[in-house]
Length: 216
Picture (spheres, helix red, strand yellow):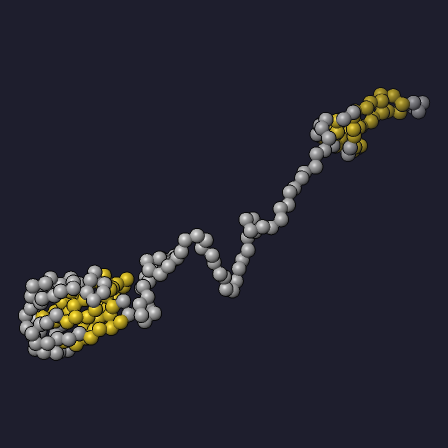
């Protein structure tokens, strides 16, 4: 078996040639060779090309701010460019429940609830706010109702409340958490009455209901 790994002919290149040659013959009584036979088989695997080798060229860029990826740790100062990002309604990445900051660094403010015998509008605050929670306890033997008003002028029995919260009797208490808050569009007023309804003004026994509301 004869194997040729590389052979060139003009500008053509043959990569691999396998050749297999078999000989057979007979010797007679006079020591002469007769019936001589020769068989051969050639297998060639070739890649032919008249073009010369062209090397590959790679361009390597110097790292700049536009093509450099970096992982940064520690404190990073960002420049927003033109414009401004002031306080108010702007929230970067606002994907969850977030309360706007007030004078107590974003915490809620609690306001105690008054419950006189004759239902009277209790002034709480003159600005629009979010109510995020309420806690009330009722010492009477009957249901009492906490009215929440969202307007700058309230007359109990005439002005319609925006919330009417039933308070269970017999010294039971309830706490309600409003996730995300309930918006109060203007000033906040409260009143406690003995009947259901946004304009009810049924009298109660004084101080039967105690508790607070939480606003931000």
